[in-house]
Length: 257
Image 1 (cartoon, rainbow, N blue to C red):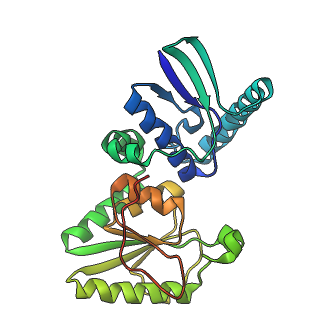
Image 2 (cartoon, rainbow, N blue to C red):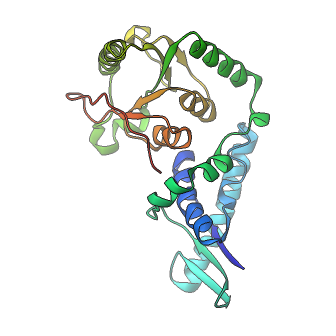
């Protein structure tokens, strides 16, 4: 019996998902049982009561993690019962197994995708709307506008105003039309945005609803963020990262994990 357990979460929802899949991919590769109690329910429930329970659960797990660190002097610790029987507690953000998150993508996708039975009628209706647009020949472009904490993070390097997003939409729309595509731009954000930036649709929902929309698109665009990276990885959708206001690379790549 070999078990790996993540006790302490790292960051917001998508950070937590990336933290989990690298340890999980390693566990699949090595035939190890994997548990992440810090993620209990985040792919199923989307309401204030659950978020309260999630915070309580992770406070409790953090206390256990700190206690283990206090006893053994380190965050990661392994309890050996015998050479091939152990429980390993892990934490932190830096562990990466990109080759394995790529190799085991399909298995991870089944585990980390949102289950249809837990989706609200509101988002199911919007998914039907997106599918209709695709049947009509539209090429769906999901734009994630993130400001808030980005005003100060990295000295505001990725904090873009409406003019930048308007310019991005204009340039990308022309490129897609040249490529014989019929672009339809959807913006997801918790910000109040100008309707004049050139998008076709604006959606202001929960993090899970925004994720589902981005994962349903043919192309994703936004400033560097695990939010867009997760949508790209799990759905294998190309992602364009907005790294600068001066030079905009309009060629997207699929995130590998």
